[in-house]
Image (cartoon, rainbow, N blue to C red; front, side):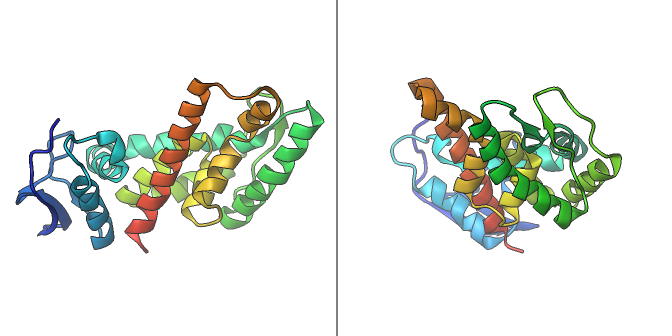
Length: 231
């Protein structure tokens, strides 16, 4: 789609701030007004629209996409999104360790165990670590604690958590990212630890590199989205 507007700007709106293109409010994919919480986020979303040159490229507008997802999904289907995110705790990536090669197992211990220890202390939610990929049961109290943490996020923050959790394959890593325990690069490295180990040995093909770059961008966007919310 060609750029059809001259200016993107933040405008006051009920419940927050809207993004207007030549005075007309931007709509979400679900045809709702794109109203966001906080001036910083609104300005960043408007900047994405203003940065479009010639053609509108949605792939270059991650904050707009996440803001729309908040309205169309996190708010409209909140219970579903909460459950999707909380369910990751039952099979969290950081709980599944390799037995071979020893170098990979050692790296997992160094990178992942401190995150489990952090989550245990932060949320009073210990997780069981196992070897291999066969699912192991996690304590019911811990799963309930993680669910409570997820429920505690408002719709906008929940969107960031959902995006980060899906991209990382780990609720623990996503929470560490959103709470500042990890930055975006560290979260990506932790979530891609196994694959990076294999790449060191066998190399990386173009398709794999493209997919990993997309995941890194998604994690970074989720972190930025959350930081712009403040609070």
